[in-house]
Image (cartoon, rainbow, N blue to C red; front, side, top):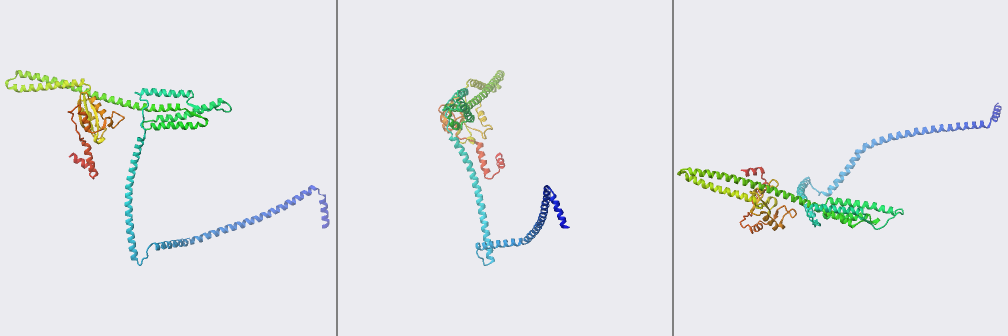
Length: 509
């Protein structure tokens, strides 16, 4: 039967086409592959399960071991602390001398404590000394900086006037002329010079255009530096600004060296001329402002003198009228008086006649003073508290009360009043003042602003010069300087520990 079935199947298989055989073969292959992958998946799942088991198992073991280690941390700390203490004891034994008893150790401790306290005191003393030396050091540093500033100012070369025009308008005109010349050089393209002809892409016109553009950039850079220097020029930096312009000239020309393009020396010279002119113009403006202030002050002084003279003249006229009226009444009373009253009235008439003559003399003196516009007083005053010893102001006033002028000078702008050493009346006071100023010109404190009439000169030198023409002029050699000297005395007492309020109370008492 079986043989018959196989024979029958084989007979059927033989009947199948080649296509059917191929499909059956592919199905068998697919079934084999599927079975293989299912088996592989089962094996992988088993391996993953085993890996997970061992992972969690090892994690539990690690946690257990960490907990066991924490139990022994204290022991390890104690062991390290023991080793540290043993090392310290070993070092202490090497440093400390051997002691036979606790008493020796205690004595050693006390001596050591005393030594420490002495060292601490010495340290504090040195710290205080260092603090004091730091104050001195800081003071010296400050003084050094001041001296360096003074040396820097003294190192400035004294500017020699190059133009010396009489007024600021001439300077303005010359500055305008120089700047016009600079513009002319730029327009004519002679402010810069290129010693080589350039071709750009074989074209000379493009080369000339390139040089013109570079020339414009170089002039712009140079002019910017020059304008900055000229705008900031002053008496203390003229030489430095000149060097700055020269340095800018060299640097800009160095940039143009690769193209053989340079700013000309003629243009540099004009920029330096502009620098000098601007500085001298500013200096001249300051001088003109000072002169205007001097003229205004002189006009105010003359106006005050004029008002004083007019006031004195008016008062003299009023006194004359009053005395004349009183004299007329006294003479009328004398004519009608009895013999017993004539003696007193004669005395009154004589007194009134004398007062009338004095009033007439005052009137004539006031009229003469008004007509004599150069008469006045030349004064010599000092202020030791402000300027120190040996410095005197020599001035002139036309006031009828010249001390009023001295009081004005000692107003709130100075801490102490001026002391008067001489007050010389002269019919030509300006000439006397100018002669004294000329004589002591080299001893002026301010050699720039001649309106500052202070001189470092001996009072006897002034007296000798004045008495040549005014032998009767009286001088006071010693400057009283009462407020200054009393202030110094109080300051010494304050430094000694006294209270200012108590000292002032004693002064007022």
